[in-house]
Amino acid sequence: MGTSHRETRQLSTSNSLYEMVYDEVNRCIQCGYCLPACPTYESMEKESASPRGRINLVKMAAEGKIDVTEHMKEPIDQCLGCRACEVACPVNLDYGHILESAREAIREEHKKRNRGISFKEFFFSQLFPHSRRLRAAGNLVWAYQKSSLNKIMRKTKRINRILEPMVQMEKALPLVDAPVKRVKPGSVIPAKGETKARVAFFTGCISDAVLHRTNRLTVELLSLVGCEVIIPERQNCCGALHAHQGLKKNARDLAKKNIAAFEHTGADYYVNNAGGCGAMMIEYDKLLKDDPEWNDRAQHFSSKMKDISILLTKFGPLPFQKKWEGVITYQDSCHLRNVQGIHEEPRILLKSIPGATYVELSGSDRCCASGGIYNLLQFDESMKILDQKMGNVKETKAATIVTTNPGCLLQMRLGIERCGQSHVMQGVHLVDVLAEACGVG
Image (cartoon, rainbow, N blue to C red; front, side):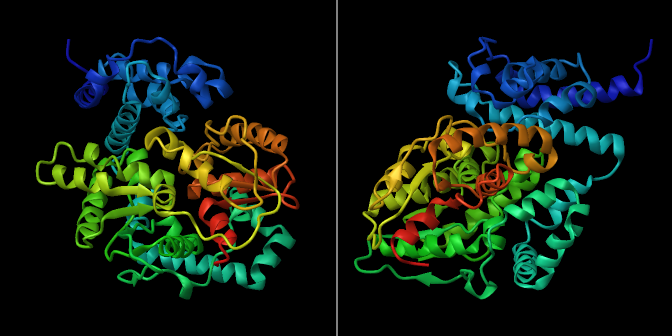
């Protein structure tokens, strides 16, 4: 009996997946230690929404026992990719690699069946790799916020005709700084006082477009603690969003461009202020492990990449100029905590602010359900997890909730709006809080 076209296609996909992750998925001992750590398992209460369940589905797909699209796609799409399961795993399973490989297999299958690229893939290839286009989009957001159109749209509710996730995110977006204040590629900012280190700053894509005030303040804080700061030219998106959506080739291309751009600076350290971007870049060595031309360079790059909290702690103390009023709490960036292993430094910095009352947030190590663009693609599930977290936030009686990642920042600001606390609570980046306490802005 002959093999059907569908069976042939399924076998082709399973072979590809087998090569990518079969050894890794077979290391899973199905112990269940990952279950309590998983936000989607807690909220959905089903095995296929757990790391263990998803790993088993990937294994069966790699063996050709189930269809990649029909049986594996939905559970994989519903994963936040927070990687808390890796911290809980007793055998140190690389779940991030399994997840990204599964998404790559799903994308490849989509291309075969639909003979083209999706709108999402087109969006990732035509916008995020192009810094000028992103800056132009950020400039449009600034113009929109400054114009009367912003007020008219909200007053007339016309903005509600757009998809609800986009409406919610528009409300949560901080005020965008004027484009002329954006840090300029190629510029060098001298250290104030003694030069302790030469650092190259990664501006990011979303941050460079609409959160460039935080970028500017990052540079000022680094200068205050004795760092000469270089803004490398030709840097681009880190590739995290691409890798998380199965676009690994795009992510590799972006990684190579960043490595080349930063190598030319001669900096002692490379620094970023976004937990997700930093996590991606410290794993460039994994991303390029099969590329002999780039692997050593990727390892060198990754070893130099540091989160802003590390350098401010290392070269501090910061010269605080004013006392802070009110309670501050902190929500961990999953990728800063679970992938980069950084959790104490942001807390140390917040506790060092004069007058600050720091209160630990219950469940701060659990994902806020931003998940890159998860809150746009899986809006209802994301809001369920966020609303539960905001209950914990309200218990702290905090006036300020601090995060260390652009996506987390927007998500927490959205949470504040949803629970009606915007009149008494603000969501800000760690850098913004420290800069205000230092009297810079």
